[in-house]
View (cartoon, rainbow, N blue to C red):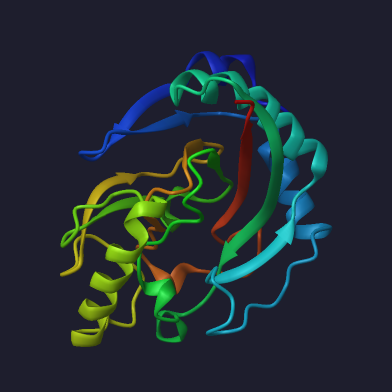
Length: 237
């Protein structure tokens, strides 16, 4: 399965927050998303979430390699252009089917905060929504005290020390991230659409937006199923 030519041609390049991080949005990406859902429901080997141990608040399973490779290669030219990449080669791509399942009262501290996947500027998150849009999209945030919307190596010490002090004074409620909190301001909410793909740098502070946790289900046919690809480039300099 690869991205359709119409989806590639209709890709939208937007920007997030004051740091103006690029955000790619593509709709109707693959010709038969129902086939991916069927694979997830019938063939994928999902792990069992362990409260307080898994960073992802739900279940994960490897996605088909042909899907991962095809989508990554199709999106590569758009990523290079949209994010201004030069003198890089495609590196590795990893992908899981993901289903959010944890009840809010079982979330760890890290699962109640925005996060980054890495500080590497050459790693990108490709998120493919394969669920009912009512189950929620993806939100991006600014850390109020530091003003950071992305985490980079030279920001980590200040960010972590500031956040640790804030959380020691007032831990976040047992709930999924929503709009603004005392520590974080939401800079953008990407509304989901079935068969929509978004692409952003993995170092951008973000969180899944879960508007109605009571609607979550472990069943890939009705739950908040996404495919999450991490695509890494290597500098040739």
